[in-house]
Length: 343
Ligand code: MTE
Image 1 (cartoon, protein in one colour):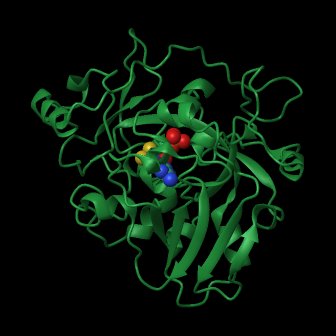
Image 2 (image 1 turned 60 degrees about the horizontal axis):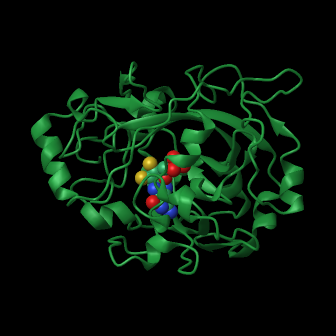
């Protein structure tokens, strides 16, 4: 399986050595990345600046059309309390944008930032299809224009047992869905990422085992939960390509692989969609993928996580919370379900 555990963290801190060794064999010698940079947490509210987090001075914002730049001039700041805010230390901008999983650009954590320079997000369109009364191919401007942008500070917990705290900019997925008027048959929402051989070296790679496009899905009630978010930016700036420009999903109570990037298709359907990781390895990755410290991955534990960035003196290994700490908002969705079966 592609999803890898970085070797910058002593694996014995969370995973027995034997399992870790087997996993390395499984990865067949794929190179793993060097340690995360030790950086001060620069992100804090600045005077006269209502947003809770801003990219560091000097960061070149990703290219964006004028209409989108205009939308970024007024963003509702995150509130002061959960669930759309946490006072945990933010993961620095450089880690959020240089330590990524985006296999279309390569398998190593540094590949998406290094290899996405040619990726084009303008023009962009999103196809809305299936069980809706307003299907069609919409330009990105049509998709985003009616939505006011807001800041939300969420934990992101990857199935690989690392986590970050990220200040996203975007709007609720529910608001987008409602505009297309799903029919009563719409029980699931399916998402697809763009496939662009010309600018995505991971897609051209002979070693890629993903069947492109990358696909993900949610049950309709999950998609309509107020936590489910369409992100178009982070740290007050447009999304960099490596983080899923121009728009991606963020589902904070689920493992990060559900948060599909660079979306070009949203399909409403009656039956549960096939998704990339379930297709690849259904025994290891489920459709639900709710963060759950009680249900371990077959090859490593899930009750602890490494909060990035780690330092030599502070390994930042912390307990993983059920539903990544969002249980109050979402546990009800899974009432009566055996979560060790529906993992
Ligand atoms: N979306 C696409 N299209 N391709 C991917 O490889 N990786 C997923 C998810 N979305 C992935 C994707 C995984 S495994 C994680 S953990 C998150 O993106 C990482 O998001 P980040 O790089 O912005 O932190």
